[in-house]
Amino acid sequence: MHNVMSLKTICLLFVFVTSLSFSQESMHLEEIAPEVEGKQDVKTEIKEYINHHLLDSYDFSLTSYTTDSGEHKYIGFPLPVILWDNGLKVFSSSKFHHGESVAEVDGNHYALHHNKIYKTDAAGTITLDEHHHATNKKPLDFSITKNVFTIFLVGLLMFFMFSGMAKKYKKGNMPKGIGRFLEPIILYIRDDIALPNIGKKHYKRYMPYLLTVFFFVWIINLLGLTPLGVNVTNNIAVTLALALITYVLTTFTANKNYWGHIFWMPGVPVPMKIILAPIELLGTIIKPFSLMIRLYANITAGHIVLMSIIGLMFIFKNWLGSSLSFGLAFALSLLELLVAALQAYIFTMLSALYFGSAVEEHHDDH
Amino acid sequence: MTGLNFVGAGLIVIGAGLGIGRIGGQAMDAIARQPEASGKIQTAMLIAAALIEGIGFAALFAA
Image 1: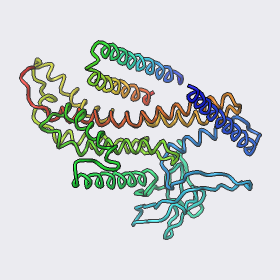
Image 2: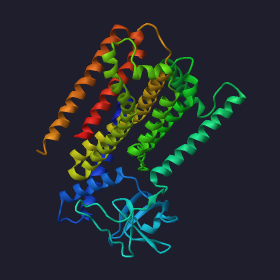
Image 3: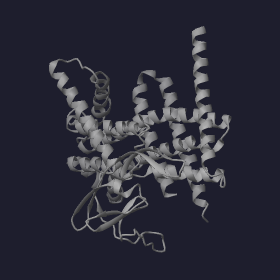
Image 4: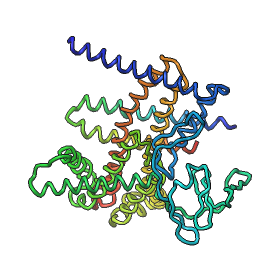
């Protein structure tokens, strides 16, 4: 009993002390920042920081700070920029100096404007139309951005993880190493997601995709919660690609029965069949669309809320508000851990459900 | 009126919250009645909640 109590006290003390040091840090930050604007300045800075975090970037920067002489220092590494502009142009993103200077490649000049690459003159002028959109020419962009880099990294990680795990099974039936952790999850996906939704006859065809998409989304969501600052699944293009694979697989593996249910619904009167056909056809597109939106919106909302609460620490500037937001951020991080796994599960589950409806055999009971 | 879309977003969140709350509550009832079927009920509950949530998010983005 006494042990438990003292453990609790230590935990409380730890939370208290860390939150105090956090609020002190925020005061320190306030001292460095110009005092003219005060709170408003910190607020806009936090807003800009969150917006910056939500966007993809051309370099992998972990953190940045401002020196006493007002110079911005970035810690991280540049990534290759690959452009197609009358020929392939490959150069390092360090040439942009984090958007502060114009990159010059083979006599062509490129500049960053709102995180997009535009072709400019040597001075880097960006002309804007009345809607504040840049009218400069945009070269075709195939750059290895932060998101692409992370996707490659996770792909490589998964390849080594699972091929190593598969090799271990050749020696015996007992999983070793990381396989002991992964085997129950893989069995769960097979027995509780694929088998009941797709059916015994066809589930094996879809297992590779279901396993891949589950682990890919899960690992990438978890990476988004680390201080690396990567956030791949809150880029709608990534979730669009994932949902598109589900859509293509559903459409091209569907049997006669599936299309029959869409275009000529059995068991209802003819006028109803005509009304139902366009609705069902629309439904086939809405299903993957909702997959895309769900993953994207959940992760984006989670990141925004988490970062806003962390940002509150720097706005409150007193020990009560700051320690409160510290505790809230901690609790929310735990919730986000759950959401990361839950969204991967939901994506896999719904994909399996759609595959199941595509290969369902004909029943006479309706 | 520029503020109306925020009112709409609020209504959506209320609706989605009520819907997901009802699903969760009913699932609790069902598990209490038949604890041995809790696995199946949980799965069905998560799917239904995810579908409502998807619509909620879609509407929020439109707002």
